[in-house]
Image (cartoon, one colour):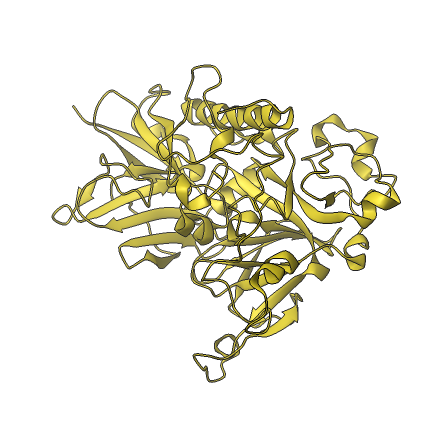
Length: 449
């Protein structure tokens, strides 16, 4: 017999806070997929997303609707903080490989409409359920659409660890060996979606792929590219991130007393996870940027999902592509974009929406499709966190010819259950523990497949 569990959900700003009804068709937990498809990555800025099937929600006012895939999938996100809240699918009942919503999804309107809620916004069981804890009501059980990533994305690192909520890969791919260090393949040029005007027409594509890395959201309102580290990349001054030195330790190293340029990393085969300042020879060979995962409450409630993935990029290495339709001028189909250094003060309106998640901290997301784009603060304005899911690297979603992934820790891993209750908190912690263990094993050179 179907049970209806009432769950409390909320985004970061609280505008979408409400109770939703989780569809629970049997005593077995609802199976949740981690979707790695291109559409989900570019629509959210994250490397993977997850949704739980629900009945039609009571409140959708104040949410921006974006038709994501051929007008069959609508994603609804908060207009204030950018958090993805709901997904609505217009299709017959069945397992939709592009969404992560299973065949148990609730249907209405002659079995053509299904609703799901982003798992990161779930706080826990509502008091309206009449129960303090109904036990396990959903489980992360599988990865889907990993083929889109080319390198597996995060799927190699979220594996069975203690027999609890182990996640299987439904779509296999050729795994790297070891998973992080040697995963990069020679880029074969950017995807057809990349803007062709970063380099002049006819220029060598391999050279272009080596020199710049394109990035874009799903609707292409946000388009920019990143350049390789240069002299300007060494100018910012920044504390170490929680990713490298956990803030809960109170370590004096957090303040980075030696002014280490920790965000600049060596080429793919010269991997190092030491905190000390690199030698001059190493500095001359820095060709990549640091990237990592985050499980903090703020990232979860401004994205809608459990795992945020950030790359640390100096503002001096980010160039926006501005078209006439961004400025209100007439648009030509073959018009080349105006490529300009990133300056938040002069970007045309309506490209990015900015949200202050805490005093001095701002997050930007696409005004049209809701993709998370940047994190920045007033203490290090020249060094930005960039959402990795937007990147369009030829070798794969992890962009390892450009990014050096930190494997020692998931940033704010201890925050996974923060402001959550019961089974929701436990399940989130289990997922992040699995990710953290998988990353550490890969960093130690252990085969994790």
